Length: 432
Ligand SMILES: CSC[C@H]1O[C@@H](n2cnc3c(O)ncnc32)[C@H](O)[C@@H]1O
Ligand SMILES: [Zn+2]
Image 1 (cartoon, rainbow, N blue to C red):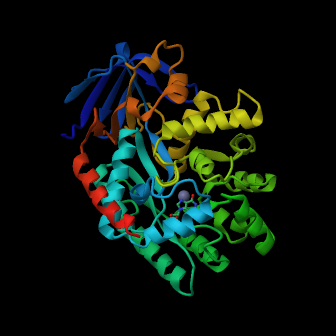
Image 2: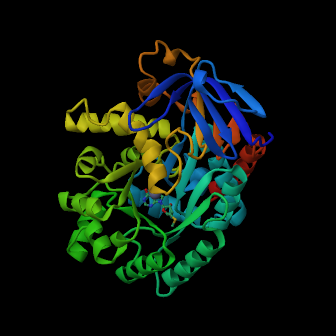
Image 3: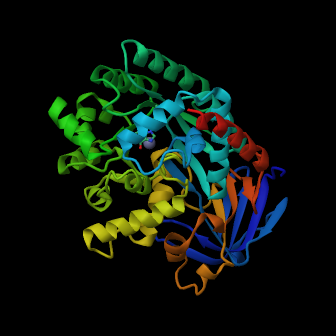
């Protein structure tokens, strides 16, 4: 596929995702040099000499998703270890399998994830793993926006320091390069000692970057931290300085009222992964309560080994329905708010200039084919997207004005080759 600098999309139902939740019928979206030049009623659109005109009659155009917690090389481990709790899953199956990963297998697994994300309408992902060079290579090729981080653990003296030094090198190499940014990443409170948490907070401050960490995922993590440290994992993050930098806390299932108040006070971002938390039997994060206390909540999938899809569509449905079901309040997490958690709030948290479809924003858009039976009748487009939509409905994904996925085809990958490579590397995993 060619890159056009001027694209005009006509006759779309435009879900703007703005503060007024406006939906514009028969809308035109004009894209120039990666930005939205115009988005609004077709009848009011200015003259535009488009290199390509897309007829979106019968389609919805909306902002793309920000998947806020991923481990993209874990696409190699989908269906490899199911029906286990987090610690058994990690210690008996995943960590041994990860020992067999190589630069090449991590690259191809990341490419598989890029395809899965792009085809499901994701425009940005917030990643934590090792093999960051492999992930950066796949991300750059795909055109997706990626915030990468090299996970740090402290199993033995000196190991964490080496990993942190590597994180700094990766920051210097990739941060601000094209569509990439780099954060720092202590894996979790139970794998990283307090001294290293402090060093990471200091380095994030020096570099002016964020910190991405698994926090309060399971009851066991919460109880052990209380017993060994005399405080919750979030309180420990405050003590070690992590809440003083832009802080991105994945999961937050087992959080106290005080934890929520701290996160609101320090402006931390919660990266909730409702499906992964259910599959690993970790529990249900109290998102509604957190949001009422003023905490910024966003959504992610976690890796393909614990989800087992990278579908923000499913995260939206699970997140909303779980909050309704656990609060006994049908008004909890309504559709328009849920869509914002999956798109705009994530984009804002990552410092991206997208998440709303309006003039001046980056053109990070997706187009949804509404020909399927689930989009009829059409009383409320946002409701249809959030409660009835799915990956399969995405017919085009655009990042910074580049069409990276369209009608089953990827601009950046030969999907047959990607599948063949994954099958080849899976043979190695089967021998463990
Ligand atoms: C060291 S890179 C990231 C590390 O995290 C592991 N992981 C994947 N999902 C989870 C999760 O939900 N909680 C904790 N750790 C997780 C992954 O396998 C890598 O080892
Ligand atoms: Zn995770």
